Picture 1 (tube, rainbow, N blue to C red):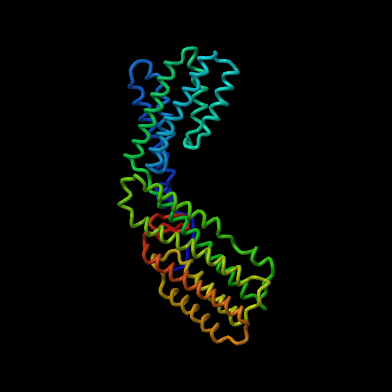
Picture 2: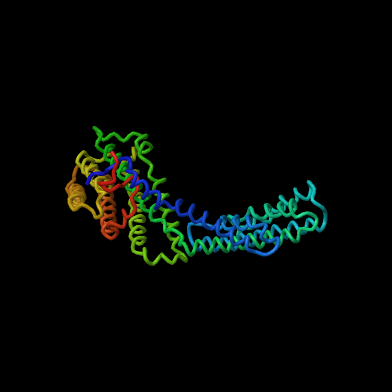
Length: 377
């Protein structure tokens, strides 16, 4: 099937926004902050007056994964306690003045450099400053309210993230693998075009001018890592295990294919290497094109058998040409043979991975891949 691009319809745009991880993160952050603010207001006495700190604590621990949310809640509590203790120590030795404020920030930054705190490191100087600025000469009451509300908010935030279930980032995983397929196809066609140039020109700038797939490959790697992290402690993980296994397999296969194609391009288009014969060049270019066609078929849930047969025929044709070639040097035959073997391995791995993934590889609609009835003009 041909690749379709277009502006998404309103229905498709709503689906994309709904499945996007930022949408779920925003909704849960809002719910956690509102709930923490309400719960914080139920505390007795003056504690309830500081309920906005509970909302702040809840917001800071909402993360894409349940495990990260729980971990960050613990780190936030420790960071708040460190900042409060630092401010109390300064208050015991002096009053609030420019010097103690400067010391609170400076020492807070140093203490916050503790690697374990990670994203919660800024709590240390911020809490120390707030205690000095608002707590007055006897900050015990303020510190109690601040710490209690922040801890309460962190617990509420972690609970909301668990009960509401952190999203499993299928959308980003599917989108990144689709983008890598497109970039990989572009690179394959660029290599084929360079090989098909009259006379087999391989100028020094040919390699530099090839499309760079490394950013797309890195996005796939990050999406896989994020999805694996999001599964930890997520009650919903088991229900979508087959989807993630399929997408992990497809994404990792595409990463290996892209690395293999880059290596082939470097060897085949090396301006200092002996040139391939015209027959080997054209057959190698045919192999690149047949693989590109396979990767470009973004709408196919499983590989098109016609495309697969064409790619295998291109591999067989190149191998037969290498065996029959007598006019090329040994190094040229080795280069063409290596391209055939690399192409075959990439072909078989991709076909196997896509057959396993099937519809799971396109389970979430995205701007790069829309159902026919939802593709805009």
